[in-house]
Image 1 (cartoon, helix red, strand yellow):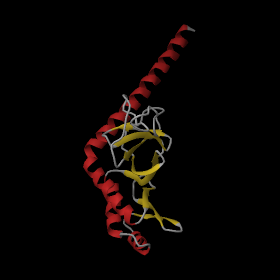
Image 2: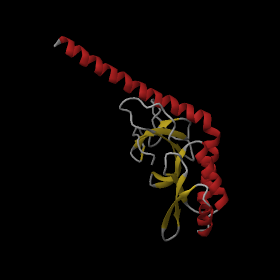
Image 3: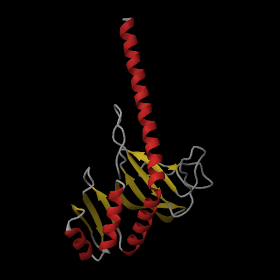
Image 4: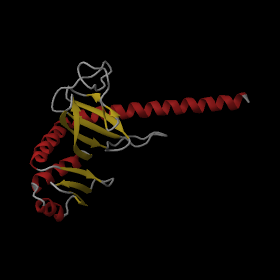
Length: 204
């Protein structure tokens, strides 16, 4: 009986260690990913904001190898979703058909592809009943997956202005409040004054 309990306890301890290692690995890889790719990420964010202002859209890769892209084209009356290969001629044709800047959006998608960016979109949030907008960029880094550790997505939030954070670096609703602000149900942590991140099981 003693041997059985000892063996069971050792299994529990081992699982705890593996879980901790997985969590630490995810955080370390996430930080390293941003530091390595921050310049290209900034180009992607700025390009997307400029293109979105001319005509709103979002883009997401739908396959593991990032060869198939889904584009959501938002018009005044309807939203159209098309899924196709990144290098298929009909991608440029479809974007042009709906009045989008086809070549710049194609280059944006290729930039996303080059650093494993799975999704980009705008997100509306409110401060004192005033609407604001930020850019969400979702990445699936190549992580070592430990036992019981599901795949994780690294999601970056790019604000237009400096944000407030608590002593643990968590995003707050404002300077004078201690309430955490959540985006899509996720708590975000500080990278810079206007950029923060979360780690989630879904990319959007």
